[in-house]
Length: 303
Length: 243
Image (cartoon, rainbow over all chains, first blue to last red; front, side):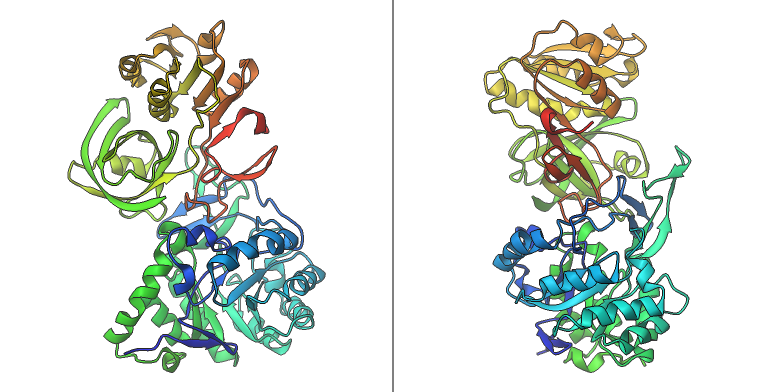
């Protein structure tokens, strides 16, 4: 008998598996395919203060073992998310929800979190300071320790729920950003967001993506993500949500050994809509295979 | 939408770089002509969306053109091989209340989904006319199959090697119809939009991430808000399209 239960910032989850923001909508599309209550949580589509269409198409380009996306935070805005998306999510998911929020100014982040704070199904805020696909916001907060700290402190001031800062890998020293967030009151960190990448269409000689560059995700980035989770675990004493190319129950275990308390599954959901379900179902057998009875005991075990 | 493993029953080339693949498996998720499947291929991360040409209760037919590595890989697959498909994606063409004498206009590899549509329209007692546009004789396909359904078929080729020399819009002029359906390249859509005299439906193509509405990779703006080509599309009504 194994236990897959973990606690993330004081909130119990039946397992550490969380579909990553931007790959799972607001959950209900997937609830039509399987009972999503088997999931530990889900991180909903990145939500901003105002509605956003995002970038022009093409927004997607394939790569070996992954994909580039330049969606650009398309979402209906916080008011419509509260009025329409969250009730639909609540009707099909009774577990703790991770609210992913993004913004273009410190005030945007503060106001969006403040507006969502009363929604009781939200257990954590995942604050995206790492979107590579928007201009004048997103990643620019996640590449500068001072800006990252400013967003963390502003959000921290308007909610009592755990604040998890989502970090970008597109920096020279991710530990420095992690420390800045920790110092400003973050309760946890999630990493990695996508790696900035590009593809060029040989027929046209021009970039495939209308936005030219996009975020690279998928199994190809897993070793990079794992390395960064390992580094951040050494640098700060905060729980980590590990992600980046996670595609199997074995990947979940590996991420946890590197230092993750919970693990997000992103690109895999787009390739196989049942990916997160399969990972949850195969996790106990993978644990048994490696002699693991309690996942909590392996967190950071590789250090 | 359903995910399943489908077995290739037959595969054959039917025109230059164009293949017909017949698969066996569960087709119960298909609700309308114009829907598509999303195909997982060995060594490719993202699935390949291909429109459904025809289906019955245990077989589905795909007609596709080799345009890149993924479709090239598909074209080399043999009968008996299995494919992982997501089936019954997208909205498909709406036929109720859409005219008794519809015109179906297909351009190149946009022709296949119109075949399933034509079959459905005829089964509803309508009298569809069909215009198929290609570049040249080597690219022409499905002409006899549409005729065998009982539809009046006109073919145009850009070089005049088969049928009328010119474009589908040349064949449209003077034609009597009370509604239209089309699938093909966007340049053709724009030409049709200029001269069409009735309401109609256009089936769009876009690079997709997931194909089932999760990633927002294929969104477009319409007069009635943002739509996902894979979910609220690929078929859009003429009246809602922003050109």
